[in-house]
Length: 104
Image (cartoon, rainbow, N blue to C red; front, side, top):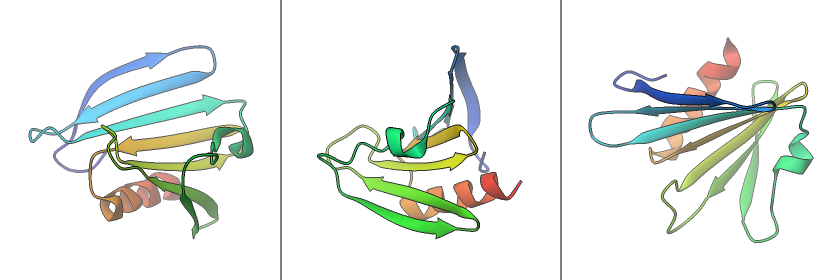
């Protein structure tokens, strides 16, 4: 996680792991891992506009939502795992975090 953020909580279910991080100013990052899911199933684009970008070897989906508690969502897949990063931080900063995450 980026500097200034600390681990708050996590929850693990059969096919879903959820991790919450926050900083002292109240910004939050929620990271979800969905096991055994395809990216096509994870992307609900019926009522949302999104952008598709290439980040390294990964195709990522970027959603910018207005009026939500978490205005930015980034989705990507690794094998049969789909990751969602949902956050209140600036989108460009989120992209840097995702880039670091997938580069490991």
